[in-house]
Length: 140
Image (cartoon, rainbow, N blue to C red):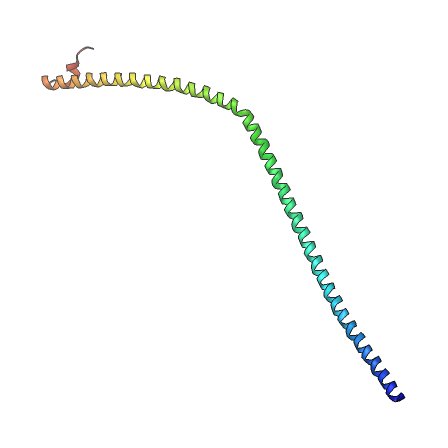
């Protein structure tokens, strides 16, 4: 029986040793998987931090542009009433000039129509009298 006891003990020790080895291998595989997951997590975190930093920088630049645009709009709006009064003055001056031009054009039309009427009547009379138009006009 002592032979069997020694053999059973050896087999038991061998079996326990194999189980411990398998457990150690499984622990090593799990450790390597955890290490790989940690490295992927770390890479993803670094990438995310870089992306967020660039987005924050971009938003900061755009915010600066918006602030400058807002200041420019405020300056323009502050000058706007002055510009409107200036435009109203220019508009009234333009209306006066347009009225003067219309009056001048009306006078020019009257002069031209009188001159044309005089020329036509002189030419018509000259034809009637069979005289040149210069002689038909006579002294004016």
